[in-house]
Length: 313
Image (cartoon, rainbow, N blue to C red; front, side, top):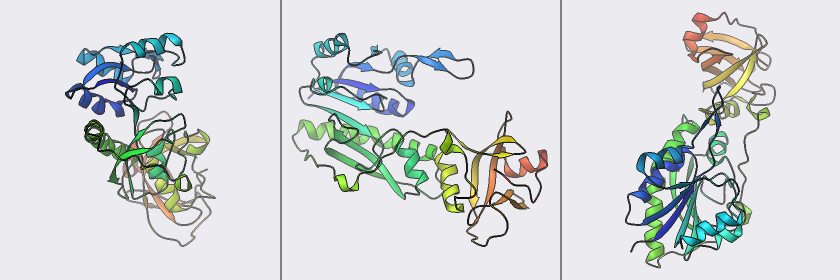
């Protein structure tokens, strides 16, 4: 059976799932994505990754400024969709549009709901040291990621995984679980499960203030998870010699002995400077001085004169 589907998504994360729908037996009526926005140092207007993909594959794409506009509603209604599939679209979908499809409006979310509802579920799962996350397909309602769960698939988070690593794992899983879920919906084999509100957590947007390492209040495990959780974007930082030093990779030494003040360079190892945290030590194994390219710890030490006893802040 071929369903009429409208897809709504924006970032690169949504592209493989969109392509799975394009290549499926279903009729992809329209792709909706965010308007083009300025990007990079030159602030040149650039299309979203979903739009770029649609242009390559000659798929009709629609970029409304405001989903509450009656003209937008009427355009979607004319297509008589059986399903609307959303994935990281970037804005809440108005209730009037949620009620439009003949069958349902479903969302592909990058966490095991009800944990990590909100804007940055992958980042916060890594930052919090979770050992697993996953993809949830849910039936949408007007709340933020509060709809009934239709299906889930778990993905492991290894201790050394960055947010980029987990992002790529989830990106591979989501097309398969979405197509399987749509098939079960068609065959009437889906059991909707209410989310347990007692287990719900929020994954809010990351603020600029949060990116700075707080050596005095964060232990080595917390800082290790924070550095990998903010890699490859937006990247944590500290200050060294009054200039910003971005921290890309680190190693938790599992040494709880206090050997200096918080933020102090305790020693210089072959793979990078070793820093005293509020509790425990970490080695900074990939760093990026302000305005320069990022370097492995040993290359950084060959090019810059970081000394024992200096304090990062």
